Image (cartoon, rainbow, N blue to C red):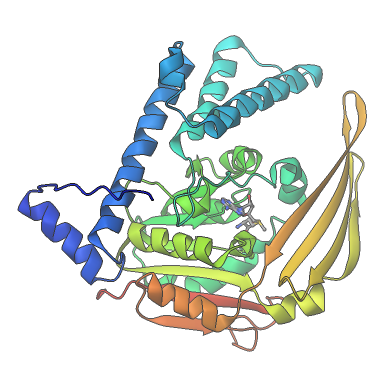
Length: 372
Ligand SMILES: C[S@@+](CC[C@H](N)C(=O)[O-])C[C@H]1O[C@@H](n2cnc3c(N)ncnc32)[C@H](O)[C@@H]1O
């Protein structure tokens, strides 16, 4: 039988009342849960410190043994990917001078150590990077959504925010919305799991800040007046407990009275639109997308086959993009559980969405309850 160890910990009064506030506010069930979450963050910080040290100088075997093996594997795979990317840049005659190459490398390395996502139970989850092979094609053919979404966000939230305040674009993709937000003088941060998408976002929105992180484990300094997530990005979160984790993290980075606005594909959207195939044919790429849905699993799937013309010739890549649907009441429950107060949901019959949004897409607006 496992023996449960207990420890008495003495805390200064302000930390004691901080824990009490978190528990009585419903964000955590018990004080132990708060302490465990605190330790998890400490552990992540320690892993990050070791990884940074590892990048700069060698670690002893004992120190390497303190980093979870899957995290080390992730970093090794990441380095391999960087090396491949650098080689293909050289192959495509896009090589740059030494200092620029080093600067790029540093920008790409940084995010690895800064996020080791964990699920609500503390299990490690892998950063979502399924859009990496899709980034250039996405930028070209799917970047249009921001132009449709911006007037809606303006009507719902942005119109009442002073310019200059901080906003976060979650799952920002190739940065078209971030570009528009920073053009309107909002201090914009974009977050996405795909390094390749972020790479393009940095070019599309040079005035915004970007981080490569998983939305299931947001770790950002500072707070935001509004958080957005558009074009069914959150349908990519495949589990209810992970979506709850996302909502809790968003709640934690919102200013008092801040807004969280996102859209989701709902069941009727998958049933009516996720069927059949479509394609794009351009001089330097051909992309075929076959869509399907599974009502039992509540999932939708895009199977993408992409041919790209590279220096070495046509290169084929196949990959799936998978989404899950949730019921409106599940989303409302989760938002409440995460601490959000006022909730509003809008479907395509709302005048502001009419004509510009697909069938079966819903927008949710949640505030964290404090007065504006
Ligand atoms: C359909 S695109 C939408 C991009 C952008 N919001 C737009 O409106 O064009 C979905 C984006 O969500 C990102 N994404 C999906 N799941 C994610 C996760 N768990 N963590 C971080 N980013 C994620 C993908 O990398 C991709 O860039």
